[in-house]
Image 1 (spheres, rainbow, N blue to C red):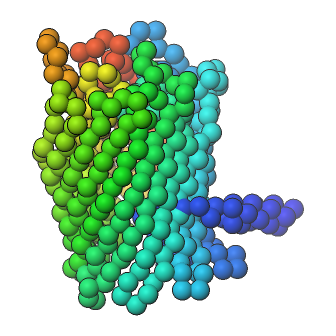
Image 2 (cartoon, rainbow, N blue to C red):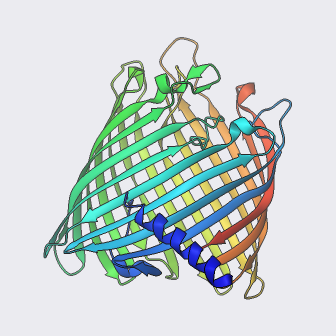
Length: 404
């Protein structure tokens, strides 16, 4: 009986892997990455069950908040395939969010990505793509779970200039669409935010050590909106930073640079300034610190505040108590600094958000973790309808992701 159950589970994972020949953002081309093998396909399945508990404010409301029992389920499969000289790598995953009482908030979503590359001595041409269909909240600004799709296609070349230096150049096109019926605070999200973007990018990478790479990157981008042309913009960005391989003393990436955001409507202000992106981890004995930061321009759904500068930072600490038990503490802060259309009487504003909480975890080997977390969320705004606070408490189960 146990053998038949294991066989059935293995077959399901293999079918999922074969069915996921769609797409890979920053995927690794090395087929040896996969934990399992089925013919020419190597793959690594994973699954996460999160938020298995209570959300005290399902709709992020200030008055009369609604409470519900909820959970989120997210199975994924990473895969690698050799096709002669070519390498195909990809990932496919499903999101399912469940709400016991407010069933209108239940949804399925999918995330798919793939990359095909052909190593040719010093030159490696590649094509890659991404498709996302979800109802997760789109960032910190919009509080409804709005159905939307995002499609990205990119093609380019990796050129090795030496044993440790690589130049990557690419061109891409992205399409962002909301479902026609989606609204928030009286605004049609499709009308406000549907857009197409074309971009050209180039990156110079040099390996300093086997675990550390320094990079310099530049991007030129055009954003064109289907209906709300007040948001049309041309943007350029230059950044420099470091990439650290997983399971080094420091892991992740960090970059800082400068963005010039040129709006095409003369009434909409422009932005020239510092941008940053980072997601780092650092381990000292039984303690692991994580730090995430983002500072960049984001488009707003609001008619007279068409974009804002997002500053988002989060710090987390995981302390191992024993080889199996750990405790986690985290804190995050967001600032949404709006730019307003130049009309008499309009004043720019800032919204502020906070998240803080912690949890307890239990590890079953390298690839399974059970957890229980409690988090508090708050937002302050000059607009009363945008303020809220909530508590979310629940359990989580993670399989297939190697634990640090």
